[in-house]
Amino acid sequence: MPARMKFICDTERCIDCMGCVTACKNEHETPWGVNRRRVVTVRDGEPGEASISVACMHCTDAPCMAVCPVDCFYHTADGVVLHSKDQCIGCGYCFYACPFGAPQFPETGLFSHRGKMDKCTFCAGGPEPDTSPQEFRKYGRNRLAEGKLPACAEQCGTKALLGGDANIIADIYRHRVETRGYGPKLWGWDIAYNPGKRGQIATPGDGPRPNQVPGASQNQPGKLPT
Image 1 (spheres, helix red, strand yellow):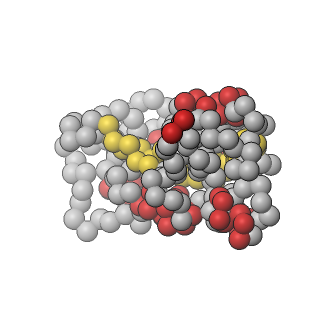
Image 2 (cartoon, rainbow, N blue to C red; image 1 turned 180 degrees about the vertical axis):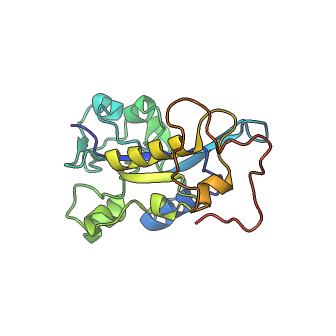
Image 3 (cartoon, helix red, strand yellow; image 1 turned 60 degrees about the vertical axis):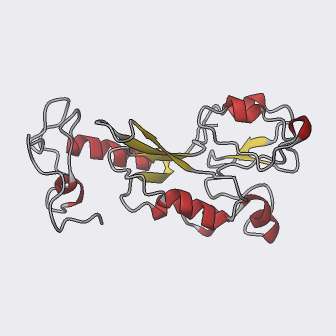
């Protein structure tokens, strides 16, 4: 089934504030030691430092689904990858198969006992009845059933993390790239958050953008993210 609901994280906007991680933890009341979302920073403190928010990417061809021996994973009508904790045996195969480290296990013990697997649900709950106490206890809040987007994406202060219909968020990200240009001379606050300049694509294609001004300040006083 094609995955209709997706996450995209814009590394040029992510500031490693951990707001998405905190929002997810608070919304679903996950157990200690289980973080459905995390922020990874590469080249920390060096030129080229970048951060990205990572969770389950709800793959079309999900490797966790392929290796699960009890078939506890399934796709929803929106293409969200969910699982049944009643079927999960805690074998850990999904943990090793997932390239994003999404499956989390709350327990460790003798004989590789890990407990029931937990992972990002795209705020879509699980196989229990929508918005029921049983669903919240096992899988967290079902925001999609309430007509809302995932809490992590709504909480993101710089709009780096986008979650929703794959075609819509891909179009938003494409428009951002077209607007700010590519390469080492990317946009700063002026392009990202100035309503007068945001969204202008004067030179489409792979050429340099007129907004790529060498030596321009990336942080202008009084310009705050909105």
